[in-house]
Image 1 (cartoon, one colour):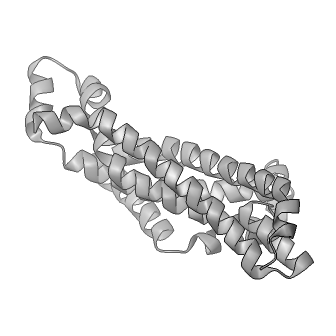
Image 2: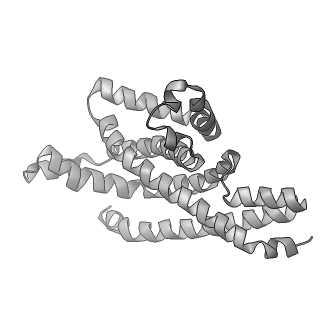
Image 3: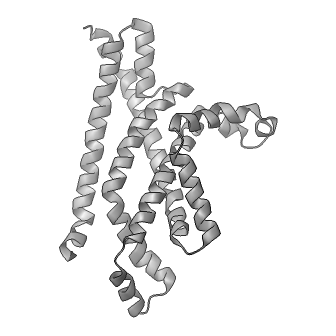
Length: 229
């Protein structure tokens, strides 16, 4: 086992780690921002809107992230209207397409998580809010969404970890994330074991850190709910 080329290129792995964390952060933030209103619509008694959101989540969750990334980065480029549009400078960017594909993917899963948490809320808490004179909007903002987000934390932590691992697909569209750096070193030095073990070790450390952060959030934000139950 020859670890010297890995040590000599430690700076590249550090840069790849930053790219991976940037992709993950942008995807989770954008996906979460889109999922919150979609989960509300999904939970409302509006048949057309609710079924439209359900169809969106069904299609996205039913297709691989890699296929979605290929459709955005390679597929849209074949249309003249897309290349002539004002969105083309963004859509021809590998970074933008990677973040967009990951954000859409995590949005679909997060929407269903939040929808399930909203549907599982005890009716007593909702009735208590109505009893003290809250409007529907106030009830949604002060009771329903805070409780649903808190109850979704354990499931969402798994989604965040899966999205961290999903960022490895960004190397397919030429981005030099952790996996991209490992592939580059393997191509230059033909050290597949050393290159990918190094990348896997960093992914493992990032996963542990992510899980620890979510466990801390769960201890802080779910403790009052456990105390009441």
